[in-house]
Image (cartoon, rainbow, N blue to C red; front, side, top):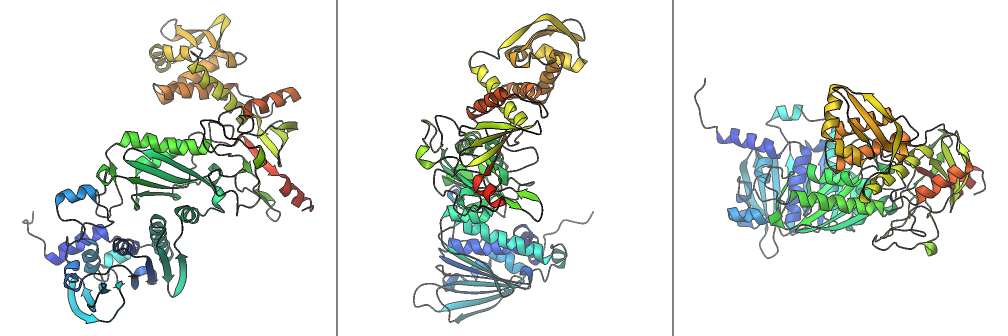
Length: 579
């Protein structure tokens, strides 16, 4: 084994630079954050060669005093903290004093800066961490940092960069996130001499709509809530805008773009039963908390954070998202028809966000009912209702494909998936029954004996109370045999043996507590709901629509599939060339 030696300073600097400067987008992020810490109101970014030839960041901030310019290129030299205790109250983006030295260690940096006052500007040239030039020059107030030949002395890093298009995308994303976190600041991005983006000073709401690619502000659901030590504000994409990945999820803590599995899971919890498996919501979440309740000193790139009161924060964020989503009309609308493709392009949800924004800019959108008829339900701020219902009253017209109830309502023709709608109705009845002492059950005229595998038998013995609460009175009747004496009233017309097997399967997945009861309710509702292909009488269709209108969440089943799709009258008229 080789003897232990202290690494040469140049080697150590390049290793340390790898923790901060991962790719060109990392350089852009660090330099832009320095500009924001300097109080800039305008930040201009120029990129050439996907950032490997040139990254230029210019700002109108306060600049660096001439006596401190050389010091700025030394590791752990910073103006933002003085002692260990300052880490508990970090207010700035940067504080480690690693960004400039790390960038300079793997590139050629030209820094020009000037403060307010009579002192001239200072120009510094640093190559591979060595200050080669330091001289006075003429320049306006602010700082310009030019990074040339990035990774010229670490060719392995260059080899592992992605394509120019991919690196350019990551740079644009870094700038866009900085713009979202600082809406009052104007940003411009120029790529290879072409203006690629400009973000003039605006509101967080407008920046969120742009970041999420929303067609209009009505595409977003606004949420806000007090949390331990601060406040959370979020702009949530409607369920029909969900994506097959989490790339549309953006988190900011005290204006800092972060990665937090805790916050991400909390928002996704708010979408529970609104999205199918494999689909993820798009959202922008801005959390403002006391600096002493969050630790940003977890990783050199300052992307990861930790919170002191994680449990309480998770619950508050999930509640904020859930409350806002359930208070918004989420009926999906067939907003436009592509005649060339011969298939519908799904558009925005019907209705407007009652906290502002409306449906301006959303093609094909229309209110669920006239504004003059809308009233807010007490205790549900921002929700829109007619007579306490979350859906307008619908009049059944008939049944299509023995699967969809066709109904007429304000401003549209509605297609209701009879299975998904009945699942939602039955599920909410079962959940509500727990508050009144348990699920209503029906005694079997002749008890049913059921043969069970050993694992299910052990689960039955352990969870008899949970099963009884769900309307299943069952007990062991031998090593592998159970006797079933009652089933939920809702499942009385289905196979008692199948109902028990589904209930045990749900318990095996979920375990104990409220989650287990919820899984039991889901299993029962799914097994007993009206099926696709079942022919319904006019009375049954009307009863289903009435029950759905009274549901707390009538827009999706518990699998996240939509229960209702609206075809706006205006769209139908265009199809028939009446518009």
